[in-house]
View 1 (cartoon, rainbow over the protein chains, first blue to last red):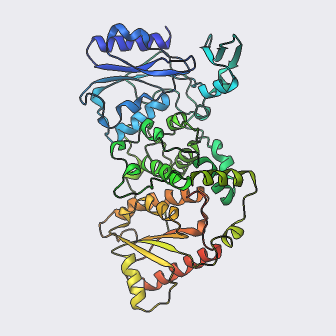
View 2 (spheres, each protein chain N blue to C red):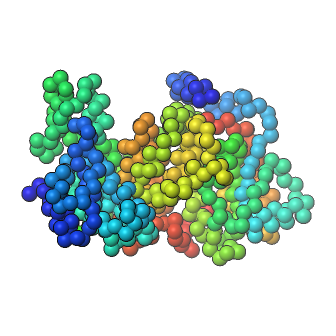
Length: 323
Length: 164
């Protein structure tokens, strides 16, 4: 039984039993390289739910801050390893109600970056197939077919994944993926090393170049599963006007830094913001660095243990910071 | 305005980045450096007052913002100051254990440590940001902290921030 069948079975059962009012999963998108979130209310509709390596959406976004629709709805949802960490982050701060959730963990061996696939071809993609584990076969409109190894076209975030299986789930769809040795190894931060090694002036020049393209669409905030006060966001406050309405590199970077600091300790670097950005700003430069420093300061990996509190909500008299 | 920004950005990215000293002696000219100090009401503000009452000579480049407690200081304050053109930001409060509200500065020091590391990561030199503890009676120490910090910033000169 494939993971997809497991997901459908769990969804159908939970809906039929009345355990959930609706179930959130993934379904086929409007074009071949895209998968979109699915909200299933009827057990007869579970056939639309799919699972393949294109299912990148972090569905925890839809339940953040007890704001599902309607408010008291019982919700089932699928989570990958990285998504489950953001869910645990929310649970740690009691921002969502555990009792109202039904969580299906989907063990994941890496998500394919659709932008990487699309950039390989000038043509429109009409089919993206996964004939066997680790292989991606893409067909374009003109009939050109090309095969990729899944490892070549994975999201950057997946290359340093430490949690392929859900940290917290009620049911698991199929056998678990192999867990990396987390006790013996430290997280890999090599993806930001190039930027870190730049001089101060080069860093400023790089940031200016990157952030002058930001259009302040706030997609990164909307899609962020742990950015929880988005309905009264300081970034959009006019009175007081903390971030200027002007769209320039400085204002944009200030806005993004506010986002980063507000999710510090909750952000698990799931990469949802990177994937949502329409101008492809490398947001991982900021949130990966933040998590690197948090790990360095506290040995803390956000969203990995249910009984932990985020480090910025606590203090320790023996902290060795400052002079 | 947006267009000029973009052109500058691409131009700068393709060419060699100017050195700090060149940037400092460039458009910003020889104006005195402006430094924003964010201090807690109970210790460092009083400490600055003590320094003033004691007639300790200190550089006039510092503008103080008084907040109830260092726990009130949002990392945004420092970033906003840099965005608005401050040449340096100094944060100071009660020594750990002396907080008027018992534990504000214990939370704060965790935030400041992350803030400091992130600020350096954005390409703002270490000399331009400092956080420390100065108590109400430490007028002498306040003078020392301010003098050292201002001279550090003055060495770099006025700041021409490109991004933040």
